[in-house]
Length: 168
Image (cartoon, rainbow, N blue to C red; front, side):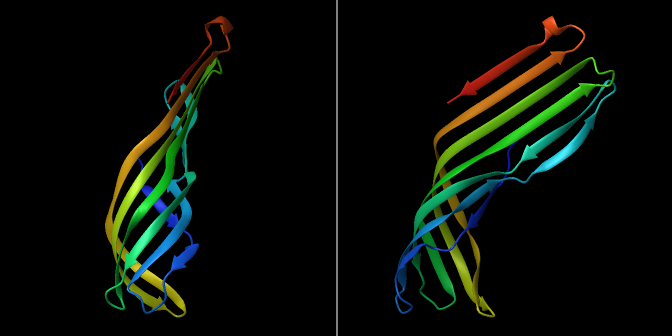
């Protein structure tokens, strides 16, 4: 269930600099998304169902410091707070409709991120763009894990069960 983290950054809320300074500080706000939403059909010899993963869109905020020694090149660092995680859902039903099995899993993480990024800046018509490459060191702060498993036996209801696992 390991998924890559994609970061969508929105416009800076506040920037303390002018065009002639080489150093600037900005507040950042945006969103992170863990993976992409996928759904696939699963089928065995005695059951049919689906497996689904959902994109988990969560907020991020931080403070960025940028040094721009040349007009087209810059280096950015700072500190960011991210929330990330994943959602997973599995549902199987017997071909003879005698039982169904369902698993729901949710993970949530709070992280502190320290980025170090180099960027090449350019203009695309009136839009300011950049290509960036760098590292983002993450530190785990806190998290939760929820796993709910349900097995419903339609022929023998007394054998049905539900299990919850919740960790902090």
